[in-house]
Length: 561
Image (tube, helix red, strand yellow):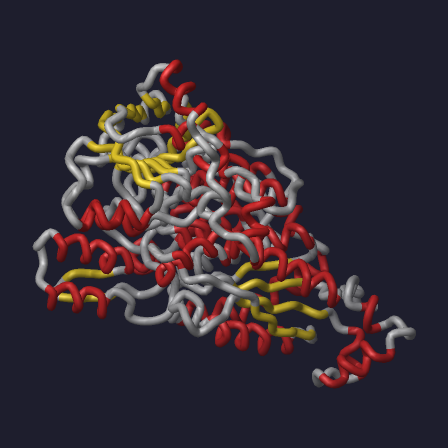
């Protein structure tokens, strides 16, 4: 007799005292013979207003068709998404990080309430991916993540473009480095179609890490959004979800401390987004795994930077696909060199090492990935800084191109908008430390990303001349001498609230320190005259978020009280 795999859905379909539930399932098109089949929730972050997500419904339809061939029942479900690129630099960006919690909550809600036996999640944009895995870990039933894939590069005037090209173009136009016509053509050609932003920004960082963790099929993170590989993946994923159901392999069997470290190690090797820190703190909590900021620093100290990838490098995810052969080639290299643990279980039902057996060896000829014995930087670019400005920790992204030490006079702004105006009006001078505060998890609220100011800085030619620190966070597309996630944040009375224009700030990415060079007596005097500002939002989701969100040093989660 064939093994039963409808462990959850049978509580609805085989319960004789639920006639209304059965009537509604018949209304969906189910037949009586279908009531014994396992049910799969096919969750996509589909919506039409964002290139990262616009194609996910089509991928979900292909997966549903594949599911049906395996004698499983598939139900398509959509959850929300927020476009970081569209909301960047606006008040809408405050919803970006909080959307991660809404995504996780909605996945948990619909799957648990409807008793689906397994889940295939199809994320596209940045917060979709951690939101999905957090939700799947809470549910802990057989699940696979299928990444929507990366966008193709744009072209203009012989140059490859991506989303960051459009942000930096404004800085170049304002500093008279390009004309209005050139500026418009860059903007029009930066994003040629569907898919997540092309560099090693947050979406591709998290996708690569989750593939290495074992929650995606091999090649999922590097197969482009419009490639034949992505279509094949959608057709084959049903085979693997069936296997997980039959073997009862669940996310918490796959997401362990070792597999989390694998994901972070790969992301650091590739020069990934600082957002991985926030997201992996949250993922670890959902998996009931003890993981802290100090673990990130420990890993970063051990792992060299070998990925010549945007924003600080030259290449995109599509180049990894075309010239390297995909993320598995890099994973195999790191396994062979003893960087990664190969014994971790994956959604194929095999270990990470077993998945890599037929993967070709790496080729360094295109200088997209550097060998470990000749890295771009001998240790990782993620630096966890402590000091009087961030006694609970802060996160820097130092690739080496910016240097590792900066000391300068503070130029203080109480909002991103004020800082952006000053940068675009050429009011920022060399050797300044730009301070953007009251933009943390509570102060933002929502801890908005700072891609606009960092892009304007780079576009204006100030990339090596100024530093930027904030209690907000940075986009995966940000680069330059930047420090974010300063904790405690300004709204909570962190020292960043008491910085004044002209104060000297010292950032040392070798000693991992960040210091406000003001004596303690003066600091105490400033604290006494400070009145905490009220929350910027008085109602709605952001108000609820600001009231319950944990600090950045704890992952900005909302399900712990």
